[in-house]
Image (tube, rainbow, N blue to C red; front, side):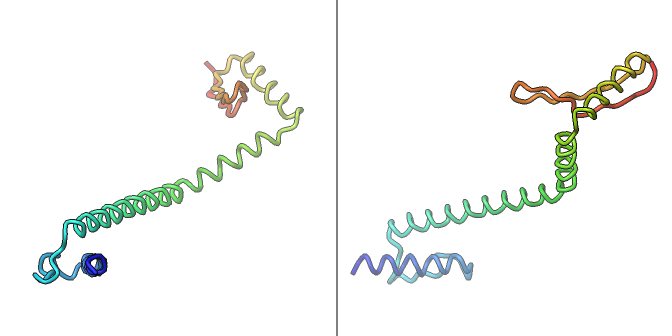
Length: 130
């Protein structure tokens, strides 16, 4: 019967703590004073609750960040699809534009992306004559 009393004490104390009706010490009567085991279980419950709060906060921050960056993410996806969909002729035309601009003495900024040993031009900007 001692175990059943302890489990019911834990349930009562945990419900009281969650509802935040009043401090834990005022809820307890001398007849059902918590045992050390009850205190250990209550500490574990509070740590679990704090852990869940931390996880929920992180999830909320990630959701907010993804909402803020959704437009940028969509534009990046569209750009990648466009670049991957270029035909050989379009790639050759891009190369020719770079060479012609360089021959004319223009300053060009070329952004190159490299992944897994493959390099690909991802942006080209003409900043005008020298």
